[in-house]
Length: 368
Ligand code: M6R
Image (cartoon, rainbow, N blue to C red):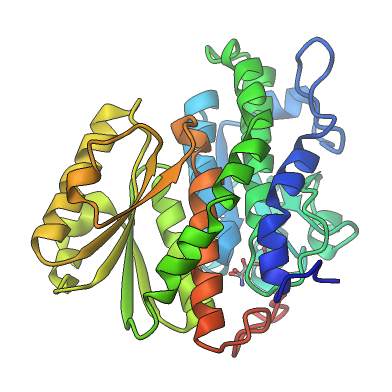
């Protein structure tokens, strides 16, 4: 049942190319238009949307953070991303022109469900992005985009996260198509780039042994930092969450630009800092990241850098380089998170932890 793997989580990590491909299946017409079959909102309802609020918890929240970059870029609609558990307690401003997007792998998360109920009571439409057919969250929503990860057994979300990202990209592109924004021409190009992602993810998985060897060097480490910028920032947060959940380590993700506003004080000799470097095409972003890496290294950090193939600017400042395939910045989370999942899975395994059932955690959190 684990297909020869020691853990469901590891099996699910390796299923990601297939899961991403399945989530893209049947979304493009012969003419190159996007179609979202289960989308029960009309084009007019979508054209009326002038604000989007994404609500979710945990890893699904990080998918929402990536979605903000994609939707704002392609659709020019303002997006807020909020933890479901905080949402209704701040008396959010909602009406019929606000689309609330609820992201949940299980479809049963109580915090997310309560937030949906609150939004619908205020006349907002709710679109669910969910992996579980017939679960409560899609049933209580106005519309749904199903992800096609298949059952996710490991408590730590992996393929659930990647397929949520795909659904978020599809939603962003679909909204752009319906609204006819100036990025309309890009849509079919991005869909093709998305369709190439399963093979890029395969190539990252092909280097799993390098990541495992690196993970094994970190037994005994007490703390790990993760840095990212732009769409790489949520990846840093997700990498840290995986390590907390599975290896029970202190791990924190930061936006690299925030370092000098406080977190750099944490850096001491030998501290591992995992850095998600933006693709070289985005030079301003990439160069700022390089200087962040230099700063932590000058203070003794051991820098482990996820960098795209062919980008050597970072090499003088990287203690370890892990290569990523060349992909557009907005899609980079689909490949960049994979080594971080492998790292956490392997480190927890060698530390002797139960990777599929980490202590104190449940797969779906049905209490608020
Ligand atoms: O089923 P959901 O997507 O609503 O679950 C949300 C979080 O509980 C979940 O992502 C949690 O953070 C995972 N254990 C992360 O690996």
